[in-house]
Length: 172
Length: 194
Image 1 (cartoon, one colour):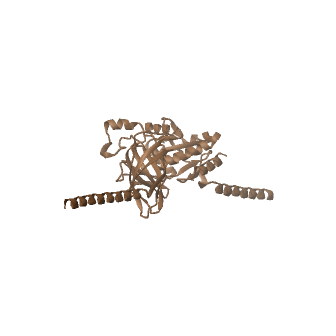
Image 2 (cartoon, chains in turn brown, purple):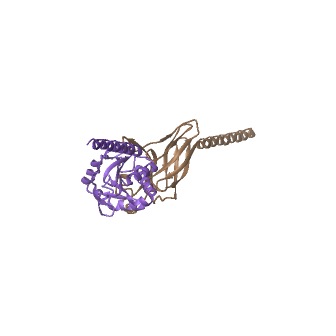
Image 3 (cartoon, helix red, strand yellow):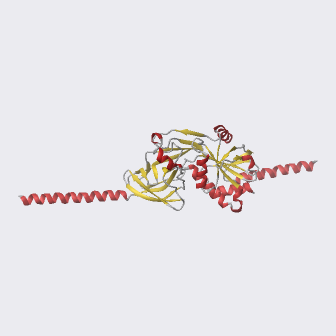
């Protein structure tokens, strides 16, 4: 009787382990469907007055980072490929290089450029989305240091299904 | 008398041919007929007076933007700077000018820092709001401040994204649309410098 219980316990543990492996494999398989390539960032100055702002009024007023006229913004571009049969989307990005990172889209409305934040950037199943000037970009707000040509800026991309992908964007 | 008339007719035909040929040659949007570029009288990032009418002999590329703009403005300024480098010995005959559409935040000090970060490749202008508004009006530039939810930016500015190109005689000749290639920019600027 005791032995049976032990077997059952071991069996259950093995099952959990196997399930765990299976789950892990699934997550990993999903992560591999998204590939990020050709990541680059536009050269941009951090603008020195950011330091002064940090000491006096950390996030500016009302949580806005550019209220005091300090800080510089930058943009990161990347090509996102999805080899999976399910559509995915970039839902957020983060970077140590900036105070805040947002996803933005620029639309050309009869020669007038309108930039707006977006919740997500879709990447179609078996397709790709190119983030490029005048379209989608990852916006770095309140740069902590200059983005200088030849240097890299690390950005973590988070996808709805595809997990997280880290990219090194070359500044040019 | 008759010879004179024939001569005049030939001249007109030649002018038309030249006109249509050059119209076809330019890659950017051509203004036909060209018109005198409205003067722009503002202050540079170094506190110096700038007048567009004193830039005769150069091609002037006018861009209306702001330093918090992360995408469209630095892209255009970088492309123009690249075009300038490609002009070689004529590089000094192109003047790239940024006119701010955000005078509240783009102080001369901030503009100076911005220009320096880009290696001094362009001149940045600001001035009294009414003068900036007059410059925008003269070139048909739209710039509208937008307070937008979902961003840490205090406000964003919707703005026209053309480069206004003035030839060495002070005529507004071309408008470069956003995204025009550096090759095409170089091509057009060289034609204007001929």
